[in-house]
Length: 221
Image (spheres, rainbow, N blue to C red):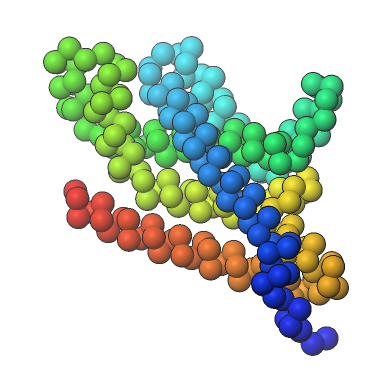
């Protein structure tokens, strides 16, 4: 079998692939923002020292980190309509699932970032009359975000790669776009090869940006 890439043109890419790329990027950004926000709440709960907050947060994080993402995607997509009595679109299901799932990983990153801030600064905040919430908001979290920014970005790159798993529930992501193009032109091997190259270029470029960011943060320190 000879490979033939001549069918690939801007018209083909714009008709089949760009729609999928747009959803993959949208899913990545929404899951990143939602995951960081929910993950920060979970991290603060685990660091609060209060058993009634620590236990549910720990159970949430440990449970989701022990289950493959594709299983969570399938469970949510198949079970939620049974529980709610109404169908849920693949795209919306993917957005909710990724946000909830990624929060467990962002939580661990944020917890490490918060713990990297010297305790002396926390005590200094208490000494000038700040509450726990004010100390976290004004002193600890800004430094934690800066310390963990490269790791957060790395996790986001992994998140973008994982968006290809929504293929399991039929959502139209970047990989699905290439698959549809391959079926229409009867060239599945070529389109999957091109999809591999596209994923590599996007993720490699983002990795280079993260590396530059790490160097800048190191200089600031």
